Amino acid sequence: MKKLIVLISITFFSTSQFCEAQWLLRLPELSKENRVAQTIGITEIEILYQAPVARGRKIMGKLVPYDKVWRSGAFESTLISFEHEVSIEGQHLPAGTYSFHTIPSENEWTVIFSTNTEQWGSFSYSESEDALRVKVRPQNVATYRNVMQFGFENFADYSTNIYLHWADTKVSFNVKVDHLKTSLAYIKDQMRTLPGYQWLGTMEAAKYLATYNYELDYALQLIDRSIRQEERFENLITKYEILRKLGKIEEAQKFLEKAKEKGDFRKFSRHAQGAFRYHANPEDAFHMFDLIMKIYPVTWRSYANYGDAFAFMEDKEKCQEWYQKAWRAAKNENDKERILSNAELYQITIKQ
Image 1 (cartoon, rainbow, N blue to C red):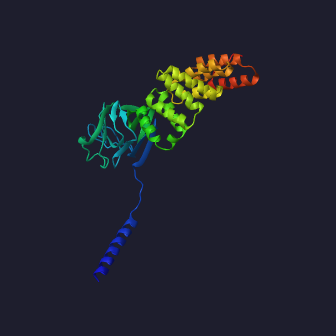
Image 2 (cartoon, rainbow, N blue to C red):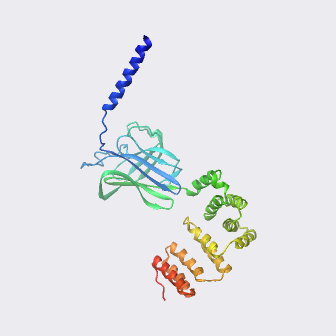
Image 3 (tube, rainbow, N blue to C red):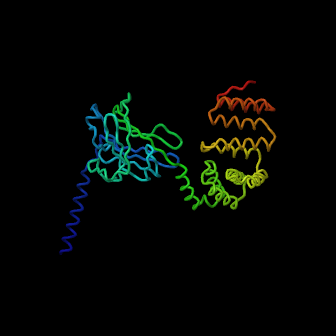
């Protein structure tokens, strides 16, 4: 009998809870939940926030008081995550997720990254839980934003600015990633998985490090591993480059000779153009173009290689100079048509 009473009580309680849940309404929130994300290098940055609406009210110094900690959003704390360690305005911040707060004032804001990610707003904020504080200057902007917004702007290869814009006030801070350090850690992890067991993965990792002249001894280990897996033009020429950068010129020359046996003009050109892949090292490309001029008979394509490189570097004058040489070296109308087509693409003029 007692068991029956307990069972009935549990059933009644569960049914009551279920019925109560059924009566709860899902209504639209005035402050919208938002997510913005951006990848810098291989580092993903994500911001989760609820955006308050101005609705004609005076915001800074009124609705958002000066000189007090503000949640920088609505309802729950704004959260910002960094996949890898970064620098904020030049100061180090470890990888992780942080609640984001600010202390606005008329001429200077304090931007705060807190290790407490469970708090509601900034009501339980404690300075003792700060991971980092930086100072930035706000801007009064002409564009009025009724709904508060976080976003990314002023992109460079390995940095960006994160901004907060509400009403006529905008504040931003710089985020930079150490792409070589993070990429090296990522490479070492990847070399323990499938890419590390085939020639292309190990070669790509070695070439990336060599492009930046970074950890060349480790790059040499990787390229040796690639060659053992399968000897190819691509890993032989990459080993030549690594050895050359390590100052081992005689040994490097041996691998250049091996690469010549497996390569041709097209393969050398494609490899040289790969130096621009990471926007890092045009010197490597020009060194390879110079080698091509010595190894193979000079054709219009030899000159066009240089023209393509300068086009990539947005140097139209040099691009035009080398494509003019390519035009003079062209032997038939088909080649000239290709040159003119590229010239049009690069927005340069060829004197015919």
